[in-house]
Length: 308
Ligand SMILES: [Zn+2]
Image (cartoon, rainbow, N blue to C red; front, side):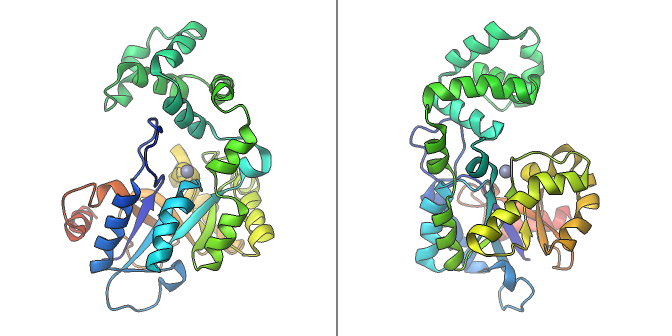
């Protein structure tokens, strides 16, 4: 069975305690294992016949670790992959809230963050409400994540996060240069046969207005890829898989995407590539595959086959 793998950070931890990266050596092991049973192909090759089943490697969020570590390994092995771009930070200097959360959780202690949040906001119900983060063993981290991601409005959260972020990285533009793929990286990756697609502009979830969403979140990124790389990107991976309204998003935005030259989109729903006819392709998160999991690639695939 054909499948697509979803990657986010591929990097050593080196101080980044607020994220769960796949380590570069794990990434390398994983693609070696996949290569034994599957052909890892470029998105353009999806419809071509191949002896082995096919696999596509997909990268979300356009962070620079993907160039430094993952692309470096792929280049050496001559394996193609699909990388997506978030154009907002580079073009507007605005870092999305979820990345600010990653930075702050990595470089401030949970005690420091909690002290600030609990002094500013009414956090009396946080103990019960933060249970959505039950998998998080550290109590204060659980509280911090809940307050920043759920309790506060986007603008409240951004305000407090930016005030903390400034104390860690006073020069946000140089942070953006180091944290996100830059034009030079993208040119090199594109020229060496990597597929480059649209992730988003500001990493907003779908808002229920397809034309406005296309104009604000998709078009600026597509235009950026056209201007800087000269490519008409045909691939789209929505931020947060579309968010809470992802089903609605797929119904409403697919015709607009097709009109604008897009050929495929990728979801965050776990699953295999069931034929290549549809627009949307489900993916398997890299942490579900060995070496993160001890089972073999085929055992994991079988689980998805029986679930379908
Ligand atoms: Zn994303």
